[in-house]
Length: 387
Ligand SMILES: Cc1cc2nc3c(=O)[nH]c(=O)nc-3n(C[C@H](O)[C@H](O)[C@H](O)COP(=O)(O)OP(=O)(O)OC[C@H]3O[C@@H](n4cnc5c(N)ncnc54)[C@H](O)[C@@H]3O)c2cc1C
Image 1 (cartoon, rainbow, N blue to C red):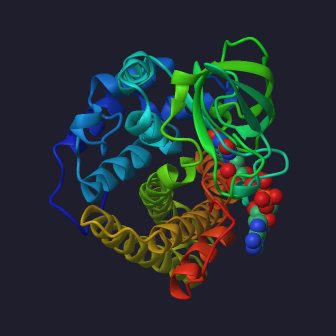
Image 2 (cartoon, rainbow, N blue to C red):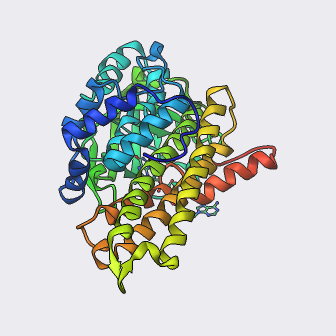
Image 3 (cartoon, rainbow, N blue to C red):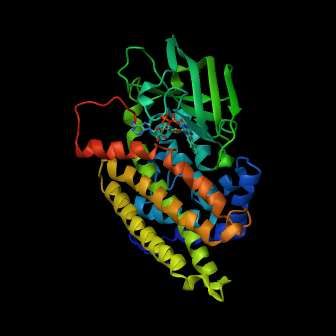
């Protein structure tokens, strides 16, 4: 990578990523996952065996305690070498931090420890048909009956709908809960009353997103994560950190397309000279390089702030928005300057574009990222959204 490398000195984990990416041929596997969507168990276990799962979680939780700026470097390199899939997989334990931080010791042993080894997959189910951006209006209920909770409702758009062994499910324990007052449960997906179906997606097809219906699903009380009504409080810090780390991933993918395009236009000749000598081609590419560098420096600064205890969510939200926009523009130029072949599967750009496109919606749509930042600039007394 020939980019601005703001932040900490290069991590020894970068060499681990490079070795793994070369040995497993991650870029080829990434393309294969798109054509034959499946959950990549072998690669997941390899990430675990190489200490690349749960990089940023504290050792007390079973994580590796890698500082956020360094983890940003590692995830960006993983995405640069192998697309979005394996870098996002590396974050799967972070996406389950509510389990790590608030699950009972028995639950953590059964699900979180094997998740860190890439042997068990834990999904997150927040979104519902009637509640996405406004997650505070979730309708799913968890009614307490003695030592169990009975779950009823439908979760939609959930990644790993078919593949996860368990999911962190967000529900309302009382109709009178404040709008954002949700409770989290760890729900084994083989429980009676759970029905799962997948949907066809534009990109990130390996996630096999889908709908999960819960009809009178009985969940033991000890599968509740933390206190009733506190789930959003638990989730907030996780969302902030993951948005900033996702930004690093999108920049890694964008960087790969940019470098490949710089090489390509230096070699491809039209009208008797290399494309790079056409200003209409060269100028967008030099601007793209600057935008990638500048956004990376911003992301590093955000990660540094979070590492030093900054609790604000706005800058991390904007980092995800900005990195997604920049990467999409860069990859779009890659498609354009590779011509008709750029629009085909011969090159990885079209898959990268479809996969990165999810970044403007998943983990909070870009508009909501702006709302989060705006609320920090102009605070208001109370909020009803889970964003
Ligand atoms: C690849 C991918 C993976 C996902 N994985 C998961 C998962 O594992 N678990 C899970 O629970 N969910 C998951 N989601 C769902 C995701 O979190 C939601 O799609 C997202 O929160 C938006 O909710 P929605 O789809 O209901 O859109 P809506 O809330 O209906 O919003 C539609 C659009 O309207 C705009 N919008 C909404 N509100 C506002 C506003 N206040 N101001 C301005 N514009 C607004 C935005 O452009 C938004 O995209 C995933 C989504 C994708 C694409």
